[in-house]
Image 1 (cartoon, rainbow, N blue to C red):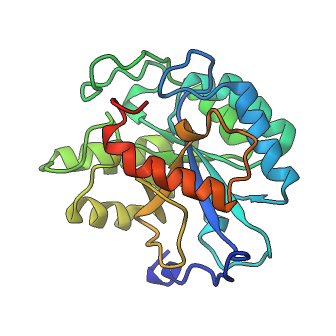
Image 2 (cartoon, rainbow, N blue to C red):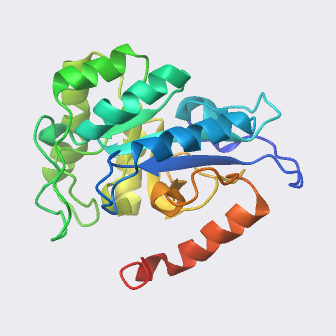
Length: 260
């Protein structure tokens, strides 16, 4: 996908204006961790989207030419955690919804305690290769999240090759599918990181919080963190009230440890 993907969809003015969003999840469990989203809340959120006539589409469709008159959402799950297989996959199957999981290829079948993980983060098991194949066999997408979840700013060769090129090659060899999508670990990036990712992937998502604009660059896509939706799973995602709430939380995001 080249620069033509920048011509992302015409929009009408909201009130309104058609809007799109990419939602970010990590673990799907009831632990209350900052990385967790309860399974029942996930079901309620997805059902509320469908009830409000929001189209839940694949990421590939989301950044393609707009062909519907509805708001659209893509679902993304970072880190390839086992709870996504155990809890999210059955819900997605039942509701027949697309989604993408971003896999840390060097930690498959292990856990999320990679070397760069901040202290105090709760340990979660990651999916096995067989569980990833079950995800694939359901028709859901698999993306790359590097080999070890290393922040991409300031890397040098051969770290670049190991984190991006070798990670893609391993995912494709193990799963037998083209790995078209990428998620930047911790949202850290640089011009060089974006250029390298662009050569191998059709899209890349960041941790920048926001709805998808008509001018969004396919390799710098913003997302909405589900952390801020945990207590509001039934609130209309595209309502002015919800957009104002998420904009406010985005402003406070750098200070989240003080404003949980």
